[in-house]
Amino acid sequence: MPTLHWIGKDKVINHHLDVPFRVLEHGYGFPNGKKSKSVGGSGNRIIHGDNLEALKALLPEYEGKIKCIYIDPPYNTGKEQWLYTDKVNHPTIQKWFSKIVGKEGEDLSRDDKWLCMMYPRIKLLHRLLSDDGIFFCSIDDYEQANLKLLLDEIFGTNNFINNVIWQRAFSPINTKKRFSPNHDFILCYAKKASQVEFSLPRTEDADNRYANPDNDSRGDWTSSDLTVGPVIKEKLYQITTPSGQTYLPPSGRCWVVTEERFNELQSESRIWFGETGSNMPRLKRFKSDVKDGMTPLTVWTYKEVGHTQEAKKEIKQIFPESSLPFDTPKPLKLMERLVQLSTDKNAIILDSFAGSGTTAHAVLNLNKQDGGNRKFILIEMENYAETITAERVKRVIGGYADKEGTGGGFDYYTLGHPIFTEEGILNESVPVKELRRYIFYTETQQALPDTAKNKDNPFLLGLHNQTAYYFFYEPGRATTLDHDFLATIRTKAEEYIIYADNCTLTSEYLTMYAIRFKKIPRDITRF
Image: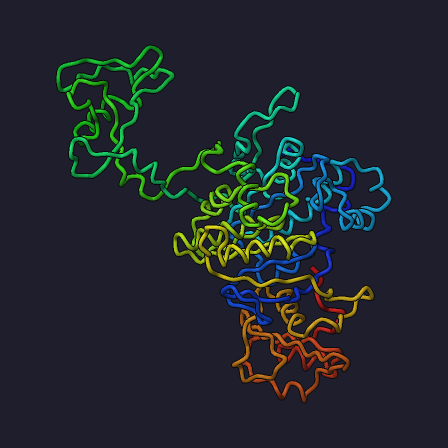
C-alpha cells in the first residue's frame, strides 16, 4: 500500500500515546433550557479545549462506543478570518510544534504542519469509533489527496467507504482561475467496513414517484428500463407485447435479464407494457421492496443538502445580533444527512472541530423529528466555544426566530488538570473519582462501574473478568497493603489487583492468595 511521508511524521506517529491525560472539569449543565451547577442526564457534552487532549480525556468512557464521527478540520488554504483560522498557526498548535516536532519543525511546509496536526487526532478518533461506526471528514482540493493517504494508513484501505462530492455553492464562483470551485469532498471510512451498512430514510418526493395505475394487489410501484449496455449475446432476444407489438433492444444495448428470467418476471406480473399493452417493456419495482430506505449517492447537490450561503443565513437567524467568524459553515441539512446515515437512533455523534455547533443542531432536530435518543459530543478549541458553539445549542433547545425549540440539554466542560505532574507523580489536584476512572480503564479498557451499593471497602474499583481491582489511595498520606487492609475486602474473585504506595506482604503470600500488588505511581499505566 502506498504510504505518505512528510517532515515530522516520525515525531507524531505515536504522539497520541504521549498526550497528557487530563480530566474533564464540569462547568455547568443545561437541562431542559435552564442553566444548572449539577451534571444533567442528557448525555450530551460540549468541551472547550485542545481537541487532541479532549479526545484523550474521552477514552475511558467512550473508546469504541462512538457510532458516527464527523470532523470539519481547517482546510489549510492559508486564508484567515477573525477568530477562526484556516491556517495552521493557532498559538496552541505553534507551541505544540515547537515542543513535539522540535527544531525540525522550523523547516516544515504548510502541508507538513497540517499533517503533523491531523495525524494524532485521527489516531484517537479511530480508537473512539465503534466497530460498526462511520467516520466522515470534510475537505477540499488543497489537502484531499494527502488526507486520503493519511486515512488509508490509519483506517486501512479496505475500510474506505467512498468519497462524497458536496455541491457547496449554488452559483459559479468567479475566481478568475481555470475552474469555479463549487464542491467540497466528504471522505467516508469505517472502523470495520464488513460491519457497516447504511441507507437514507425515504423522502416524500421519492415516495411520490410510486403509483398503482393497474390496481396491482402488491401496492404502489414504479418502472425502470429493461435495457443496458454493452451487449451480452444471451440477453439479445425479441419480446412480443400482449398486443402483438415486437421489440428488440436499441443498437448497442441488450436486455438486463436473460429470456428465461424475463419469462419468469412476466409470469409474476412484474413486466409493464403500458396501459395499452403495446409499449416497450419495463420492469415493475414495488415500494414495498425499498421500504428499508434509499441507497445514498456519492454526489450531493445543494438542493438536497444545502449550500454555504444557506448555512450563513441559518447562523444569522440564530444570531441576528452579530456577525460570526465562519466563512464556510456547513448547512443543517448536510449534517442531518450525515447523522441519518448512522441509522442507530441511539447513536453517539462526535464532532471534534465543532465550530458553530451545526452537528449538535442536527442531532437535536432529528431526535425531535423521529423520536430518537441520539447523543452529541462537541469539542471546540477556540474561545467562542461557549459564546457561539454552546450558545447556539441553547437557542436551538429553547427555540429561536420562528423555530420551535427542540428540547433536550447538554453539559459544558473544560479541560482540567493532568493525571500526572511533570515529575511523573499523581497530581493531587485531580479528584480521586477521576483517578479511579483512569486506573480502572487502564486495567480493563472499560468504564468505571457504579460500586456505590457494594458492601466492600471504598477502595474497590470494580470486578471485571473475575478480577477485583482496588485503588488504595489517599491524597497526602502513604497507603500500605497489609493484613489489615486485606481484612476489609468482601468481594470474592479469582484474582485481586491492588494499588497502594507500599506493601508489607511477602511475595509468597501474595502468590498464595492470587494478589498482585501495584505500586503508586510506578505501576500506573500511561496510555
